[in-house]
Image 1: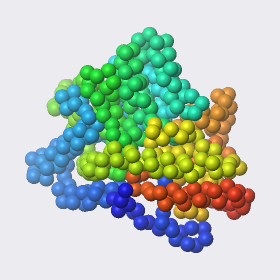
Image 2: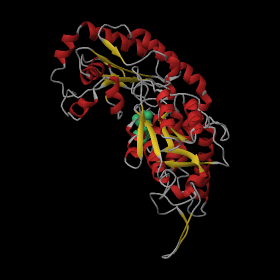
Image 3: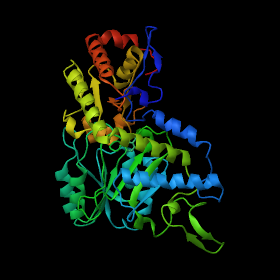
Length: 437
Ligand code: PMP
């Protein structure tokens, strides 16, 4: 796809040998650079810039309309139902899941929340500390065990209130069969939250009709992983969840009426968005969604799968390269994690950056229980390994492609990985005292 869609796609970076090369960004699972269309829209919109839902000035009215239109754009993007769902704009996926975890406290009282061993900490910690939780196992290749899900749904005999599962792993890219999971959840009286942070930017998603047993009850995602800037995310959920009680954060914008004695809360979603909202973030997110829709999510998915297939075909048999991947590209987004025998993850990441201008991510990617399983670290050793702040802390190297990456970039990565594998000691020594370690 066209690189010019992206801001900064022509950046240069200086290598160890003094040459300047095109910067190759393979860290899109962390954050994607913004679309040109997004930046252009933000600049154009700045002349309208004004506070939302405050006052009758022309700019404020236009700002409010655009902000509310953003909810429609998001709802349409995820196939939600305007009579049934509400779209709440928050900072990111983490804030969305924390809000949901807080607002479900009455419904989930005395219930069990099932999360999984493959979650990002953002879909694990908000449940772990508020509810009785259990975790669905992953198999030897890191795929979620549906048998274990059904086993646990049966075991707890109708007590599971929610299954909080990622749409796609930020470590392996594995896509979970969310509609099958939804069907199982509903069969046993549970709801399903999909953490959409890694799924939504890469593939067509649909919540499905609310009367379908396969519908998704809740979805959350972040703008900064889908070519909008930091600071905006969306939670789409049934309105009724927010009708009772009030938000964990209260203040301006959340009320109809306040006296010292009484408070009449606004309806959702306003009730859930305390303080002046992030209008520029919503303008950016709306534009990134429109751009993704114009490009066509199915085509993006296909293209990124081709990139992933190509990368796996080039790197899978490099001597010493350990892949954490079952190579089933149809069932994953464009993320690949690996290690190289004889190098620590941080050494390999440093060499790729300094020798090839290739930006990757290394470590545990805020998914420590999952990385622990992929690395087959026994439970009894986990604390010793994971809390070790020294350089030997375990981890992986992750590459993740965006829609603007291309085959040449992947070829260069594979070329460099082969070169490193053949000259391991040379590169290890060269970067032994690197401050980047
Ligand atoms: N879930 C997944 C699967 C993620 O990859 C991430 C970001 N790495 C998050 C949640 C959290 O997203 P944010 O930091 O935008 O809240």
